Amino acid sequence: MAKSAAIKKKLGNLLSDVGIITEEQLHEALAEQKEHGGKLGQILMALGFITEDVLLTFLGKQCGVSYVNLSEYGKIEPSVIKSVPESVVRHQMLIPIDMDDETLTIAMSDPLNVFATDDLRLMTGRDIKVVIASEAEIKNAIEKYYGTKGSMEDIVKDMDVETGTDDVEMVENQEEGDDIVTLEAQGEEAPVIKIVNLLLSGAVNAGASDIHIEPYAKKLRVRYRIDGVLHEVNAPPKKLQNAIVSRLKIMADLDIAERRLPQDGRIKIKISGKEIDLRVSLCPTAHGEKVVLRILDASSLCLDLSMLGFEEESLNIFQKNIEIPYGIVLVTGPTGSGKSTTLYSALSTLNYPDRNIVTIEDPIEYQLEGINQVQSKPDIGLTFAAGLRSFLRQDPDIVMVGEIRDTETAEVAINAALTGHLVFSTLHTNDAPGAMTRLNNMGIEPFLTTSTVIMVVGQRLVRIVCPDCKEEYKVEKDYLADLGATEEQLEKYSDEEGKISLWRGTGCDTCSNTGYKGRKGLFEVMDINEEIKELVLDRESTHIVKKAARENGMNTLRESGMDKLLNGVTSVEEIMRVTAAETT
Image (tube, one colour):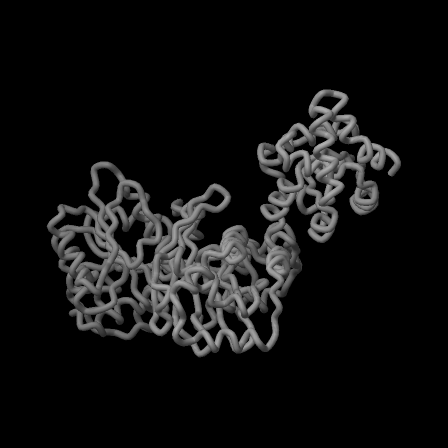
């Protein structure tokens, strides 16, 4: 402590003695400090007499520690970050940057904070090596590696915002007759911009696919959809509701004065060096406009078919059928089940210079090099059917239609397949066999369906057990037999005592205490063979078609899930959640 006090006391003289600043500059800085207060080092930087790098390097030498530029340091390993709790990092304003069996290296703006180093030595059981770094870079590193928790409160505190019942009155009073200039000014205020940027960067860093900003009578709720499940996060005060919505409208180039009708738009931003597309949807509710932002991160798009979650046999069938020069390949499943990713992966596999690939989508989620992608615009007549008709005059080899929603689109897709084109599309059905019945219900004759559809893929997404906190436990074979495991699976994975090992996540910082990190696909791949065609021609029910497909080797979604469960990829709860409606 004596050394720290001496350095603080002599800092100006020390800088002057070595010629970093002049005596005149020192006197000016001391006069400024006497009048306004503050740290001498900060005053010297504010007056432009010294740079932060020079000051920190000098301080480091005086304290016997090295200076580190964190912005140029490189990536800090997750195991190092996890060695120090977030609460300690934020309270003491430090960041762990390296670690071995005996020593933990931390970056601090105050290298003489012995209380922090002593606490860490006791907490980690390692020697503590201190390096000096700027406070701003340490804050940036904390937000990058530990997330944005707590920052919302800091911004709101700086704004001196008071929450209470008058928040509701303010929103209600502004419900009608808003001045467009006022709304625009609110959206351009620096604290509001910070809060919106915080919400966006927090979602991207958390790996969220959607952000929900929901207005209620007395509060604003913000939720991130991570791995398919919504999680509530820190929300701004209700009073900032209109300002936040206005800011998002400005970013999406929407009408900020229109609050009675739904609006849709897009935002393109860069976060942590990654280009992110945001699909914006606004919908008026009883207490204001609800905003949902779909996050499209091209860097997270997996285009490797082998990484999606196909079982080996199913992948072989899939790869064989997408190489057929003409026909229809359908991918089925509910919204958010990963259908687009599967189609993009298939197109990427087929994307060679000698093939003309054209798509019509609503919306274009990811832009693929070498593929001609068209945005559907039904309001001006560019529907899926109209776009598909136009494509057929563009000499295509492979065509993708975002979704077969109606009879017209189905008929054009079938005509495209009959004239020698390979067509990919999606259909909303519960499973693969149901797609054939769905097309028949649309009015498509069975002989046309069986002449063109070559494969149907049904899929779902399950969460992956977090690798950092997964633990093993054993269950009886009968337990899994009741869930739908096959005899082959039970025999393959049971031990000498007739028990089977499963895995579950206990919760940790990596997975935000959910026990899950990431998702994998469950797939059932139905090859349309002659037996299936005969059943479809006879207009047999989905149940009969599914039974025949299983007899021909198709794994159901539940069986695909059981395979991932037994291999330690996911949990029993996830399999039951995603395939609950399936009977085995």
